[in-house]
Length: 229
Length: 114
Image (cartoon, rainbow over all chains, first blue to last red; front, side, top):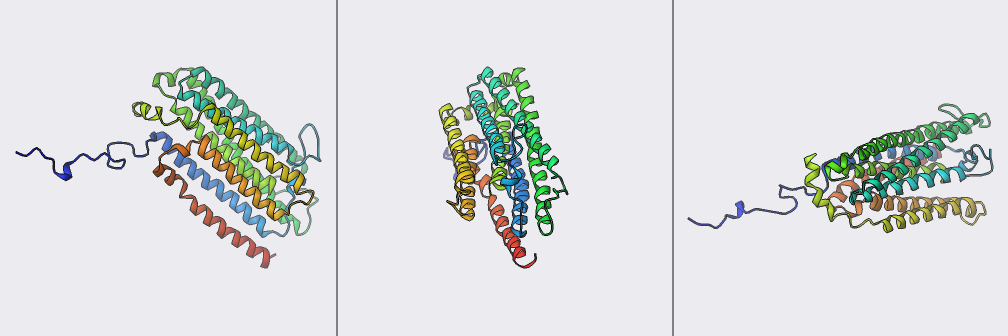
């Protein structure tokens, strides 16, 4: 009886030979990534349609003129200032989120709680700012299917498409921020209830973190294509 | 949650890439890039130091740089395995092609329809 193992029966241990996770990423995290890809496709479709409309129309509202107010402080004359504040808030909340994830790796529960609270505050502040901006634009006459009277003739179609897409895209993004805040609150409560201490890992914080960074990522693109270009 | 449990050890060594120092470094990169965008929008374009076409190209390049920093460092993709990175990134070729198609469409209409 031979003790040599035939080549077929030899135990293979490469990444894709089976028996282990080839990506070395936890299942839920992979699924979060794949969800985010599908979400990225939705946002891409919206933004690319916006770009197409802008290329199609002879005239388009000037963002420096549409977005020049700081609600509650100045009605006009400050292009980009308010959206700059909003962008800063969202980047900042992305940083506090990544700090929560970092604390989670060290299983430092108290730090996770503190950074999650800051992230939630950042998200809520952003939503508040967006509500102010929507209110301001609505008072000026912009809404789905409606534009201020200053647009006449050939300018009306570009302005109408601008208004429709502005409220749809920032609304869809704002809804993501809102969902993110709700999920962050749930994770905060789970952290405080020691759920992750019992699991001995804070992977859930990482997964919500991925979602939250994605929301920030989308805003980077919305900011460029609505406010800068 | 036993599945998560078994990966506990895999994850211990995997996250050396993101320290607190690195996080704040990436934050300042993002802030600085946004600062440059504001400088272009509020100073260089109004003074006519830059044409709008060139300005837009710079905006888009800077946006992609910011996207890279967020995805690579904040979302940690840079430190994942090559196969996983590929499975996430390659699908965006479809988006690039979609952009090409739709901009073609848009500029055609602009030239001949309005």
